[in-house]
Image (cartoon, rainbow, N blue to C red; front, side, top):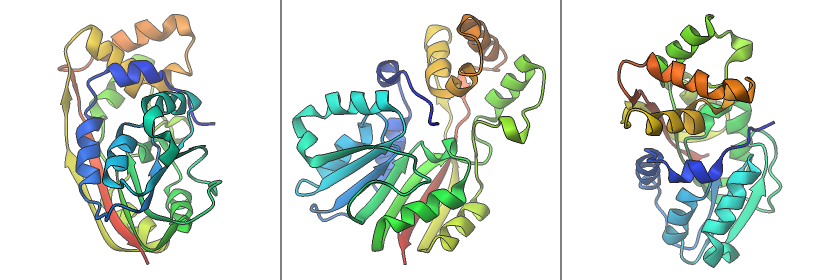
Length: 250
């Protein structure tokens, strides 16, 4: 089951996701009347920008978290008539009635471990020639935080326990090609995010980065775990590496 998120705290943090979204949506070539699928829409930050890009079109938003979608409905209440809100698993057929002109996604795919199923499923919902632009955590993403987590837990994370999937360029290109995409461009971009030490770093780690780890711990241990991970970081920096994808459905 997809994990739930603290959507309000998420929206209150200084998220680098805003720049990732601008960078990703900037790769779209839209006329203004398209239907766009926002895969892993979260609280609707990028959905709002998409609505501006398609003033005569609409956006289908998909996310696994009901709290995120509730926040999206509130945020976009004045334009919700042009938004179709769907709670669903991106690796399974989506309950939408049409193929879309474009699919975009920001900071979502690294939460999904089966990229073969993910890209094959999304391709089925994209019209021939449709655009696919996305970004997510890639190979090397949050390596220092992963090391700190393993140090706190006192063990290496095995494959069954892995929470993230940080793909590389070669395997992502292969998955996209096998799913029926063409004009494929994939690259990795180091993009570290510096935070204020103390409360801001702790809140960011707890809400954005370590949530799935915390789901496995008793609530009484959450604060201690987050502080212990933060204390092992050499500086208050989240060492992001972003995987950028651009392609078209054949």
